[in-house]
Image 1 (cartoon, rainbow, N blue to C red):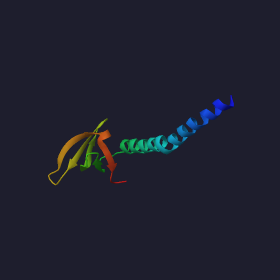
Image 2 (tube, rainbow, N blue to C red):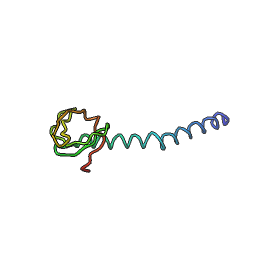
Image 3 (cartoon, rainbow, N blue to C red):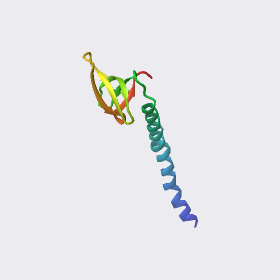
Image 4 (cartoon, one colour):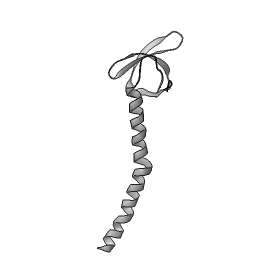
Length: 88
């Protein structure tokens, strides 16, 4: 009985370390990014995950229309493709 308990302590310890060092911080980061994407507003300056910088001119449920460049080109991107809100 004691030997099986000792054999389980090491794997459980590794799982706990793995959770607190890798899984939990990633979940916090994902939650923060999701919150940022849900709080976007028209006029916010954003960067997409592809590196395009633009200003939000229209927000739909899952799509965002952004305006880029001096000629004010507009195109739609999905909300999940927004990497950063520069206004924050």
